Amino acid sequence: MSVTLHKGDLPKNISFGKTVAVDTEAMGLKNARDRLCLAQLSAGDGTAHLVQFAPGAYSAPNLRKILGDPKVMKIFHFARFDYAILKHYLDIESTPLYCTRIASMICRTFTDKHGLRELCKELLGIEISKQQQASDWGAETLTQEQIAYAANDVLYLHALKEKLDQALEREGRMELARRTMEFIPTRAALDLAGWAEVDIFAH
Image 1: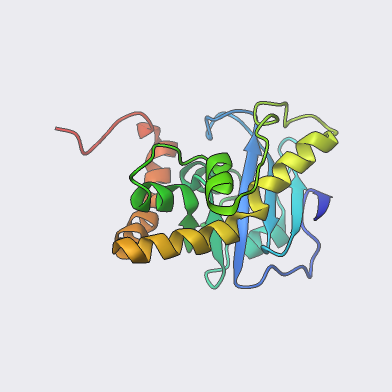
Image 2 (image 1 turned 90 degrees about the horizontal axis):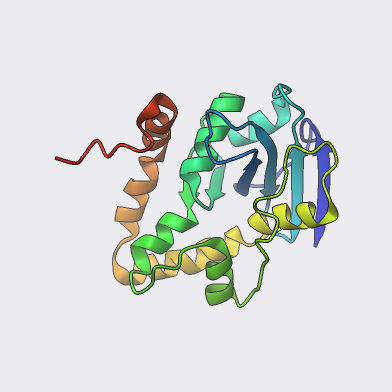
């Protein structure tokens, strides 16, 4: 495993191919309130690149170019949050996208365990720690434990997508999953506009 931490942006000529795994870390879970601190990317090849943001420094043209490329599929886990915070701070549309959490919820209806740790353990036989989830991601210097945690959030998403796609195909729910994921930008826009806790489809 190789993990590289970058300050403010990715190197100019870096490439992740046609599919990139993406995650973010922030100061909290309110994407319009809690600032974006870190973006993690992986090509699914055992390497991860982390981009650390200083407060208010979100120009990141190289990162924007990759995440905004309509020819590159972005794999998230819980895309609703990550898409929204990237839209809010970097002003990009990270589409097309795939969400491993949504895929799991649609094809693995025999369980209520759809977290990244559970998926890695059950589908890949890999144990990952979520201990650093609630740590201070706004710190100027990240610990080695934080860096390892952040990398783990993207290193296995390609493999999970492959497993989940097999299950979606088997259950005849691939098209439903695809349409649900296409709705995420709208769901994120509702979140950012203040409807995060309101079910607008309820009677």
